[in-house]
Amino acid sequence: MNNTSDNPLNRRTFLSRSAAAVAATSLAGFPAIVRADNDKTLKIGIVGCGGRGTGALNNALTADKNVVLTAMGDVVRERLDKSLESIATAKADQVKVEESHKFIGLDAVDKVLASDIDVVILTTPPGFRPQHLKKAVAAGKHTFCEKPVAVDAPGIRDVLVTAKEAKTKNLAIQSGFCWRANYAERETFKQIHAGLIGEVRSVYGTYLANTPWVHERKEGWTDLEWQLRNWMYFTWLSGDHLVEQAVHTVDKMSWAFQDVQPISVTAMGGRQQRVEPQFGHIYDHFAVSYLYPNGARGIVFCRQQQGCDDDNSDQIIGADGTCDINGFKPLHRITGKKSWKYEGPKNAMYETEHAEMFASIRKGEPINKAGQLAHSTMLAIMGRVSAYTGKTLTWDDAFNSKEVLAPSEPLTWDMKLPVPPVAMPGRTKFS
Figure 1 (cartoon, rainbow, N blue to C red):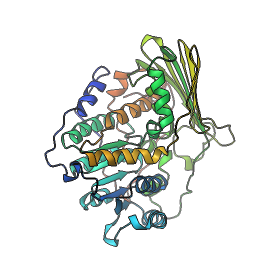
Figure 2 (cartoon, rainbow, N blue to C red):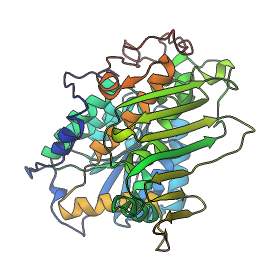
Figure 3 (cartoon, rainbow, N blue to C red):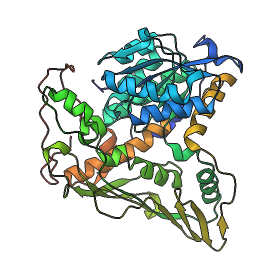
């Protein structure tokens, strides 16, 4: 994995160029499915068959009955078999995966993409996504790409180049930022952007959760296999939990500010509870403050610690009112000069994002959310880097970083892959 790019973009041009990447179109035969054809059966493949991958498969097959699964890939056979058993039980009529289309190994992505599929679902650890997305577009496949789309700035820059290429080929790229597909969130942010709470002055969002699963290292596991099986705890694979999990909260903060770039970020974080070696080297808590134009602030708190209270909510304060959001309760309410509460229909947002992608493909107008996916991911990355280094960073500083987190040599099962030291603010250098 080597996420490098010679396409530096500064804060002022990031959105304009990513918007341009989703503007120009060409129907030059990529692929035949882009023409409106509501009766065509779409064949999908998946790379990354863990829990999120299996969930995404179920969402996709539920969203559109004229979709079938024909190819699967993972680095671990047991995980692929477990995923296939689960999805075949739930969606028997839509699962048509022959033995020859079950691909195992570090090159599984290439084999899935070489098969006769129309759409690929990318749910591997985030560190692989820039490379896998680039390969998917090169192969002429529409893509559902989970969040986050990268773990470092060079990866983000690569994704923006890929987004432009996808648009020239008329290929869809759908984002895994599921709250953007939730009807209640959509209407709530529509009210905010229409001025119901006045100018947005601050956003406070939380993603306070417990420690997720961890797998004790077994005899015979190489360094690479152990890290892949515990990918959440290694920054080159996950980006740390601010980037991997709490990026949902970062994305909603960005949504409130209409996806403009912040001026700078100042963050803190550390590792208080998860100090054992099986937890890799990531932090277990962050506090991040983004400075936006006109002095507005976006604040994100996140943690993954056992025995603590959970909270996943957002409060958006404007000049004329306050908006409170808790999608799990659910709560979508505005109080102030004008009060409002969402009372509209509910939807299964994980299914909606797939349904909208399939509909756009069949219509011949495939959606391309890669720019927004990259933007919110970059916001989370710059927060992590600020916390790791103890430095206040501008958007330009973070976006133009040359730090590549992936191992410098090609991945092999028996390679030596030492665990990096835990970042120490004030000593860990920004690059």
